[in-house]
Image (cartoon, rainbow over all chains, first blue to last red; front, top):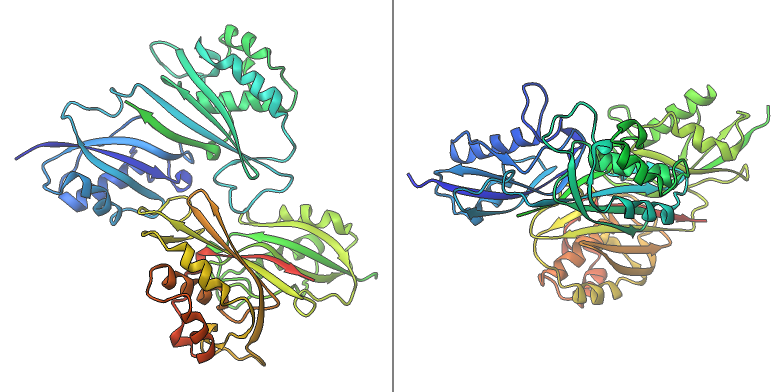
Length: 246
Length: 246
């Protein structure tokens, strides 16, 4: 039996799932994909995702890998698998990779996109796909504030309290802003992200956008290592895991 | 009791509804709004929509009006009403209008947008918001074909068979094409549309896009008055009632 390692790029709308990671109660994206692979190959595989995403969080380019002895050609896997998956989960591509490749351990960095719908009235089309803000945000101040987050910092103040990690030092390489109609998109690229870090960074930029914080306050917040000093945790539905870098 | 006529502009995601019009079985958008108005005012009103939309069809600017003796200021109505409506239905604005105004009878024209997602793999974000086509369409040929639909014609061949109307003559003022990332949008503006007319026009342009019909065939199809000569009825999820003109 010839064992192969298959790498998948996966896109999903997280709205109706209890997040990525398989769990005893509640439907998860990982569980749906494992079930699809089982229906296709008869095997119950270990599907390694690049990382978890929370309930309601979306992905454009989640990466996951699994070992299989199936003879389905690697590049045909994604189409076959899509026939066994619900419409809100789509595998974009599949390819064979080195047997030692691991989606999580080999990840060198990630990018996330956070979408904000800025309009006095909510939209029936994006209420589950973006964070709705009714009043105009000060985007100039937010961009200035974002500048203080770039670089290597201890992001302890931007991590959900109670998480356990070896180090809270991370490097943010880039934060960029784009406008798509009434959707504002903030892209974060970095070598790794702490639990809820993107959502707390967005929540803090949002407070800057409403002038409840000054752009320079970011420096003080970073130095404080105190979660209570940073802003709100922006809601899950605005967050998209965009790309995993290897 | 001072009777007033209130005009609403409504946006909705049609995915989870059996269309606009109230019916004994199945949840409809009209029924949800009537229920919201009842909770707000205690009145069970007649809500006149500008026209029906089918199950799964969306609206950006549906128009509807109703008479009420409620003292809620007209321009505050939409916000109050939104608190009584599900997130996939949003009232965009409300205003007082002439007592004689009727959303359907006074409509002078409408525009519809049809969205096509052109990509080898379906998207988890738009499977219910656009028509997914896997292969590239010939947009040049489709634009040429659209030109033959513009003007005053007998659109009987582009009407779902079995519909009863006084006349099947309509005027299409404009058909325009736009590209938004991987979404293609076709906008139709006209003085009125027959049942399923936009979806059949799109289905026919789609056949042109796959070279199963030639652009000039549109003329023959129009002249034939034969529904069987036109293309497929494009799926409901791509269609948006865009604007009603008065």
